[in-house]
Image 1 (cartoon, helix red, strand yellow):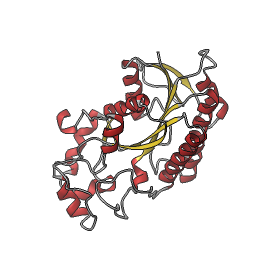
Image 2 (cartoon, helix red, strand yellow):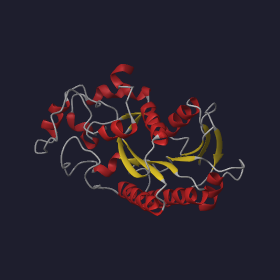
Image 3 (tube, one colour):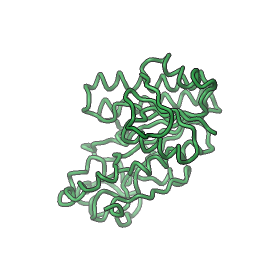
Image 4 (cartoon, rainbow, N blue to C red):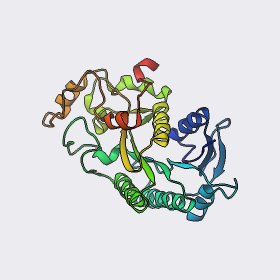
Length: 284
């Protein structure tokens, strides 16, 4: 059985990931600073990822007798504005370095890490270079949080350069939603500007978990970044109408169809076999 350490396991996305991996036959060692709700899957250990020694113990399997086979790194202060900029940077960037370094020490060559849609230029006060946005243009961080994510991706690139057998998939997750969150979507429909900040994107936590598993199982080596969003937007209006109203001067890479996401998931579809299953309108 493949043993996977999942950091940030008690978080909004982490709970979906742990449940999905356990259901998919993985042995999960879950870790966070706070315990998950009762009944969560996997074996849970409290750990502080800013302490390299604790991370090395987790990944080398001191308590299990053998190292993990892979690591899914989701732990972070998850968005701008939840803590001071300095505190966000001090927690997130060193924590990611420690995970990558501990994986190197443990001989783990399969790493999935949570990046963020924010590296694409959110909140798009400066319009994106084109629509739909994708992984082909250089990151455009507009906050300390997203700057940290860009630096974490850059670290990952160099870790894979040092070890050509290493695989690191950075998943640029959109705004994570639970099924109970979909009730609020109706309040956004009369104002296209309300969710312009992330191009009306979202990711159902169950589809986010699917993307994590697919990234773990992907056969490439080296570093790759993937935008991970649902196939639709949070709006009922056609995506072409939204783009024309809010971003009239932004060129389209191709014609937009229906309510398709403006956070392009074509690379994730092509490389990972990612196929979102849980559209918000189907859950209401």
